Length: 234
Image (cartoon, rainbow, N blue to C red; front, top):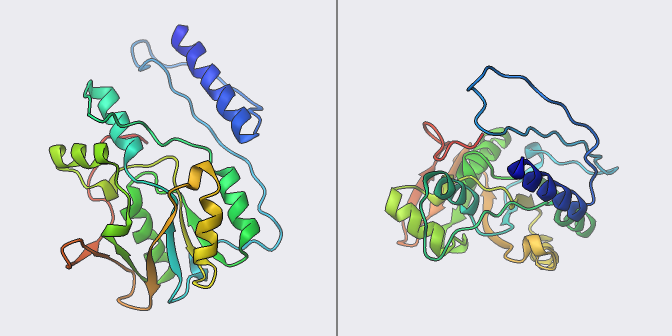
């Protein structure tokens, strides 16, 4: 009950911060011994503003790819907590409401092609999905993607790629190149987008492909997450 109260207090605080209301609840019965402490499922209802068209089909060659913050924190934080591992510096989840940030973005620009949150499968899988759905190519630059020291150290130790680690408080946006820099400046005015940066661009070919320009000067093909996500979150 102490854990439940702590979780409900956290949910209440998060809802107030995001200015949303929790309007329904339900309970489930499972077999004895089959419930691993607590499960909470959520579903959100929202309204898309008039004139807003967000879809990978809107992407065009030359569009810029924006990442709102550093990658990998949520997945590493969950894995560390589950397995009793500690890192120095400690890795804290990036879990964060993004409705205020996205509201700022949509107000600042009418040329946002698409927005996605890189959760399961991380930034790599999300970008691959966008490239596949649009039929275009995306090139990103490794030196422009912020990876916190704790995340990088954990990935080096465990043989993981931070681009495939789950995130909960960042987003990827593909935008018209004319609006990219101004949009980044607007995003940095919000706590959730203080580290926003342009990390790449859309090109016509090779079709349905994501390319990473590495710090060493090479080119690496980025594909979908293969196998199970580590740690398994959803």
